[in-house]
Amino acid sequence: MILETVTGTNGLIVPPDGYLQSIREVCDRHGILLIADEVMAGFGRTGKWFAVDHWDVVPDIITLAKGINSGYVPLGAMVISEALADWVRDKLFAGGLTYSGHPLACAAGVASIEAFREEEIVEHAAAMDAEFREGLNALAERHPSIGEVRGLGCFWGLELVTSRETREPLVPFNGSGEAAAPVARLAKAALDQGLYLMTHWNVIMVCPPLTITSEELAEGLAILDEVLSIADEYHAG
Amino acid sequence: MATTESRAAEGRRIQQEAKEYVLHSWSVQNAINPLPVAGAEGRYFWDYDGKRYLDFASQLVNVSIGHQHPKIVAAIKEQADKLCTIGPPMATEPRSTLARLLTEVTPGDLSMAFFTNGGAEANENAIKLARWATGRHKIVARYRSYHGATGGAITLTGDLAAGPPSRGSPASCGCSTRTPTAAPPGIPTRAPSARAARTSRRSSSTRARRPSPR
Image 1 (tube, each protein chain N blue to C red):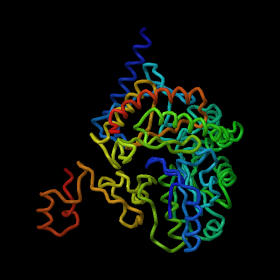
Image 2: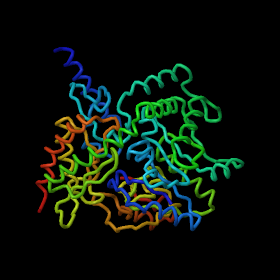
Image 3: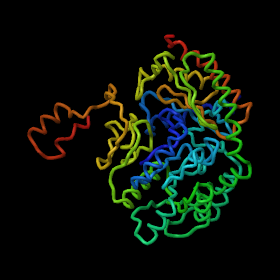
Image 4: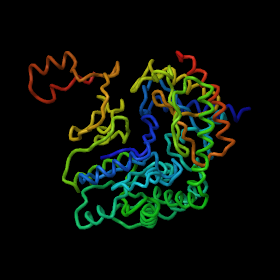
C-alpha cells in the first residue's frame, strides 16, 4: 500500500485523525507493507519533521526528496524499517543508479538537516500554521469562490468552486485547456503582481519556503486577496 | 540605462532558446513563455528585468529552506572542491553522514537509506523492495495521488499524467476508490488511427497494431 501522508498536488488533502492509524492496522493485520510517500510532505512542510509524526504512524518504507536538500542538487531516498533492513542485508539488492548518493547532493542534504536543526526551521513551520490558517480563512470569508481551506504547517491549499452549495469545482478534475482557464487567469494576474503560485485544477497551492516571515506571508496574502476576485467572477452563488 | 537594456536582452535570448530547444515538462510547448530567472534569495526570485517574485510555491514545493541558503551553498562548494562524484559502491563521507542523519530524523525504526535522484525513483525502488520482500504483486494506491511520472510510479495515480502519452508498465494494479472519468478531450484515445487500423488488419505483428505516430 502506497499513499501520500498528506496528498499534495492532487488537492492538498489532510487525512482525518485516525485514518492513517487504521490503514496501519489493516496493513499489519494482512501482512501488507505500508509505503508513506513524503516526497512533498516531509522535512517540516507540515510543521513536523514528517507528516506521519502528526499521527504517530511508522511506515515500513518512507520515500523522500524535495525538502531533503531543497533540490539544490537532485536527490531522493527511501528509508526502510529495521525488519526490512535486516531482511535485505544478506541478499543481493538488484537495484541501483550511477548517481545513487551523489556526493554534492548528499553534502547539500547534510548541510540542510544541520541548518534545519540550528535554525529550528521545523519549529518555525509549526509556529506559522496559525498565521496561514487565520490568513487563508479570512480570505475565504471575503471570497465566495473559496470552497475550502485545507492544510497544515506551511502546506496549504485553497479549493476553488463555482458554488459553495454544490461544491462544483471551478476547474474539473483533470481539466485542461479552456476548462482550466479561470485558474490560469488568476495565476497570471498574481505573477504580474509579483506573486508566484502553483495551481492544479481548482486548487491553489500555498506552499512557500518554511522560512517565510509573517511580513512576507502578509504580502502574498494581500496579492491573493486581489486576484481571487477573478475566481469570484465565476461564482454562481 | 545601457546595462539594464543588455540584461533585458539576455533574458529575452534565454527565453527564446528555452522555447526553441527545451522540451518543458507538463506543458503545451507552443502555449508557454518560460520566465527567465536571473537569481533568487530566501523567499524571492527575480527576472532579467529586475522584477521580483514572492515564491508562494517553493517552485514545485521543493525549496523548503528558501533559495540560496548560505550554509547549503557553502557545503556544495566545499564538497565540489573535495570530491565532485564517486560511484555508488564506494563509501563517501557525505553519503554515510546523510544516511545516518536520515535514520535520526525519520520516525520509529526506519534505519537504512537507499539514495536516488528524486522522488519518483524513490517510489519505484520502494515498490520493488515491497514486492520482493512480500512476494506479492499488487500495490494499493489512491486515485487522487501523485507518486511520480516514471513507468511504475505513474500507474499509481488517477492524475491526467497517467493518460495515454505516459501509459506505464502494465505490471501494476492500481486498486483504489476510483471515480470514473472520461478521457479528457484532445487526448489521443486507445483507438488506433484509421491507417494503423487498416495496417493491423493486414498484419498481426505487434508493431503494426500500434497507432501511427502522427
